[in-house]
Structure formats: structure tokens, C-alpha cells
Image: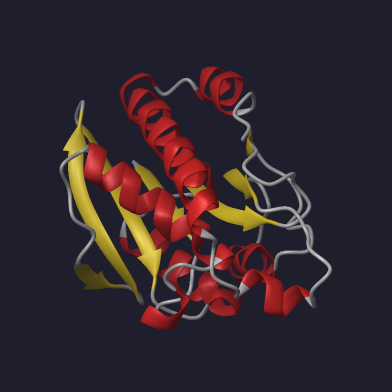
Length: 188
């Protein structure tokens, strides 16, 4: 069992913002697997399928970012999964823009969506992939909800294609150490 959740905000006005990096990563992964993330369940849109006799769930919570834990907790319960079966992908202002970082566990840092997941799930012992968006001089809320400039979209999209390739390999081989080695060298 593997549940891969990308964090974002559900309405169209947020589609091309820095705070929707998790959604963009899930979309890239789904496209590379010829899947569509459309089934409504557990306060999320999902795609479920099997690979190597293992159930895989791709999910985009339809709660707003700060309540992402509701969807994640519901998905874990529905699929009888543990936090060890979970990967969460999200934006991180504390990482250099375009950098990707995978970790086996860790704190939520400054990310309110991750804080909510840790609170609702009851542990920080789950895998995560952070997408660096860097900081700007703007107010944090204004920055993360600002639209991504066209030139940056190309770089992020390239990184999401790489991430999709690495996650597809992980789905097949289950080697998270290898995934971390591959992901943690990706930069702009």
C-alpha cells in the first residue's frame, strides 16, 4: 500500500501558485502513469491502481491547504494504511527555489498544511518530498499564493517530470534511499 499526496488549494484561482506545487507534482506523476486524478473520496481527488500487486493511491486534498490533514487521515483510514505508507509532496519556502528534497520523516517546519497533517495523523514519521520555492520580500501569504512566472514554470515542470520518473521507479522497487539520492540532487 502506498498513498502519495500532493498538497495544494482546490480552486482554480490557486492553480498556478507556488502553494500548489504538490498538486502539480501529482499531476505530473499521474500523467507519466497514464492515470487521471478525478475520483472524489475522503475530501480528496484520487486515482487508485495496482502495481506489482500493491495498491497505489495518488491524491490531491480538496480541503484548503491548512486543513490537509483531514483528507490524509481519511485516506489512511479508508485504505487501512499506516503513516509509513504515506508520501506527502509540498512547497517549502525554506528551500532554494527549484530544489527538491526527499526525507523519510521530519518536522512540519513552517508549513501549515504539514502541521495539520502531523496533528491529524498523530506522527511526523512519514515520507515527504519538499519542492523549494525560496522566499521573496513579500508577505509570506502573498508570496505563496502568487502566480508562478512563465520562465519559472518551465523549470518547475522539468523538475516535476524528473520527480515523476523517480517516483515511478520507487513504486516499482520500494527503495526510498535510492529515491532520496536521486531527488536530493535536483536543482534549478
